[in-house]
Length: 332
Image (tube, rainbow, N blue to C red; front, side, top):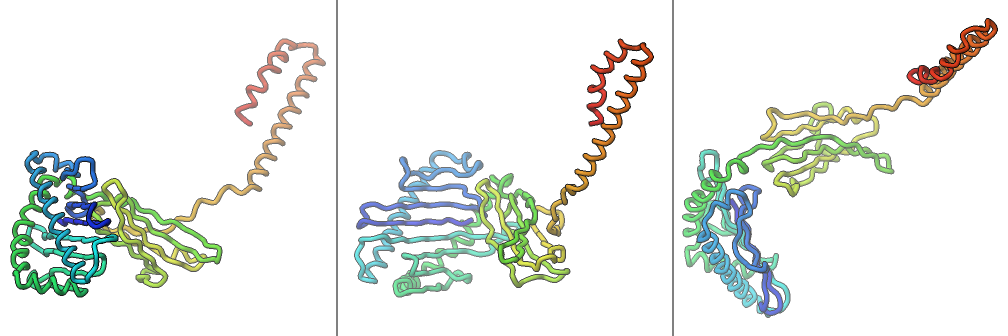
């Protein structure tokens, strides 16, 4: 579970925008935007609609308090650098925790970023800090005096884990599902003669997935490009891995896909399109059909003349002339 907060200020802090987003894995479950018509924390996932109105009132007030806190921290950074409040400034904060199977604490997170320049983060030991930039180092020193890391440790190891477990229980139909990827390989030939095979994985959940290319059974690392996993916009994810291959050697390359939703890893190759029926075959076929049709018509004319000479069957011939085209159509 991770919470992302961003404070964007401009115009001497007369106006600001503050957003607060909460995620379990990669699923947004609640959000706040100070620029909304009626700013308040709102549910963003189905299971969050079970919460009572007082829960949302509390979370809205907490967002307002954090806005004030981040504004004060940004003021401190600008003071350290002797900068005024004009122009654009940002403070970004991320905090949360992750758990192992069974709900055991795995890791805690707490990071701050000022104007994309100064950075301070709680290390994995939950007792020391990493800081970059003059202002971040000064803030780190203050936090050491306040023993801020110790209070964070209690929150991350206990409170955060407890909240995360509640989300996993209430939203298990969504959060604990596994949607296998839809996979295929595409082929693209560039103007310089290079062939690119791209292995696609679409509409999968959760986000963890592995795509690798092999040549004759050996892992391929050269001429390989892998796209970062990205949201599809519908609660699932997508990813691709591309490899440049020599022309004519496409079948020597295989793509290997491994995902939690698959019963076992799958192997893909590029499937060349089916060749169309040669034009010459079509022409020959039409020619033979025309010859056969001509033979049938010649036979019918000869038959009619023969019967006319005998002076009988005129009614039958008249009927045949109307029905003959209908009988011939299926053979055409």
